[in-house]
Amino acid sequence: MAGLMQGKRGLVMGVANERSIAWGIAAALAAEGAELAFSYQGEAFGKRVEPLAASVGSDFLVDVDVTNDDSLAACFAALKDRWGTMDFLVHAIAFSDKNELTGRFINTSRTNFKQSLDISCFSFIDVSRRAAELMPEGGSLVTLTYGGSNRVTPNYNVMGVAKAALESATRYLANDLGPQKIRVNAISPGPMKTLAGAAIGGARATFRHTEANAPLRANATLEAIGGTAVYLLSDYGACTTGEIVRVDGGYHVLGMPQQDNL
Ligand code: NAD
Image (tube, rainbow, N blue to C red; front, side, top):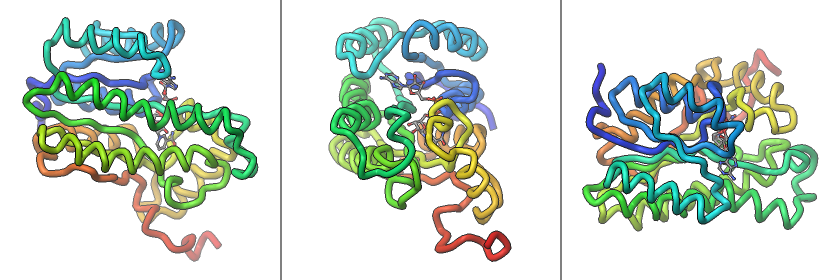
């Protein structure tokens, strides 16, 4: 089953290393024939992303900090120069002060609230608008969320609020961009062992708890998330928009832990 993304070009934002969810998605897209550009945050990450990009045949890398308008403008100008148009975008970016990803949510500071919502939610609205300008024939946008958006997950705190905003933004963007045949969806994986994941207090316990209790008794894999992204970004997802697709082993259906784990 190769070639689902043949002839499609897109930007993958948020690869930090080979454990990044964005990398799992990029690898799956490349295996299906997609042509990829990558954005990375700063020189140090650039050094890690370059060989990964090269391994899937891409030398198209752009340094982007989503809080910096100039770097975003330069990124989309580069896409326009090189490709003219594009077919898809993957937004796998989130950030919050680590000190507030532990303890009580009620202690969230104004500064970190603004920063977390800016980087983890507003940036998707921003890049969606910029990408849509390069999608005259339609396209598909995907972001990454987590179930802590609508169920309290200890330590996830302000990031849960940011993900709730991101999921809502996904629906509003889907409605705005639908007439242009641009689809907008979010993938919601269970806990993953990534840099961002490790910043959340009690990450290991959350990982073990989900694995032990999810109906599939397994956590998500980069391959499973990548496969879901291929579905949403390829023509197989043609009538799906505004959706939050869980890739969490079914964890979200539970009302209580499995009896053998009580
Ligand atoms: P990761 O650390 O590999 O990726 C996070 C990326 O965000 C990094 O590449 C980082 O450079 C980028 N980033 C942060 N601030 C930025 C900024 N100002 N400008 C540009 N880029 C910036 O971790 P990940 O787990 O692969 O995270 C990707 C997405 O998946 C995030 O939205 C995260 O919330 C989401 N997610 C993660 C998990 C998990 O358990 N790891 C679960 C569900 C959803």
